[in-house]
Length: 376
Image (cartoon, rainbow, N blue to C red):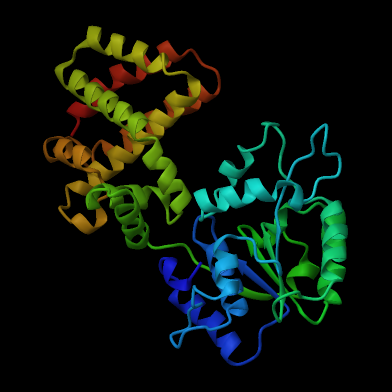
């Protein structure tokens, strides 16, 4: 992993390079910020940079020395990965090494470290991955051995907030009394959930959310997406590349939601009560969870269509199909009805979440849309 492989975060990369250049690498770093921003990639690149035998003049690992080759296969002997795991009938005291092969596959497939995806790799689907106290004991034994091929042993800990209390207290001792050749790189999505005494002994490095343009660039280059579609996905994802990728995976669902939205608006405009009854039955057939997601999608489209009327492309986030529909539809969403439509959509979603009868709720909302759409 090289720094240039990671989108954005130039100031953080500069901070990390400067630590090495100044010879002031702290024994414990905490990279913290929102999920899907590339924090763990930064930690991996920094570890490789520290171990690299011939770093380049522009502050990159060379990529060709033995240490870099080992890092690229995620098997460097002096790099220890610590992450959350689950107990099974066979593994009563699990540690990271028990799942290291699966974790390497996960890092390759999901470099932005999607925790939901990691949780889904376990056979025990309802179990919540945790860093157990057994991990601290195993880590202490491994750190007691001197670095084998490098100046430093580096501990890459993903999501220290997943430690149980006993594990956190033992890790605190390791950080308070570190071995002289050991560096801890902690990578957190929720730094406030980490034991305060651990945080106080780490040098914090804040990693902010990615901007929409960087997420869109990543989607466009990696998935060959249309730029407008990529920007729409990036905006919805809120800087989280994992969320953006999940959104792309759900494209067929989004298309279904879009078709249902268009159908609703056309039927309401035509005052087609019979058609709206069938529409409400179709939405109910989606199931409670999908119905709620559908209304969330509808609220977003109403907001976007309201903004669309200002004709400022930089503040409108619609994919191509949505934008084409909005060219004709946006004029029906104005300051006179936008707020009311969103309020009724939100009310319908709340009622469905509260186990109300979907057919009744959806049909009632559809009938209200006849009036709301005419109040533009």
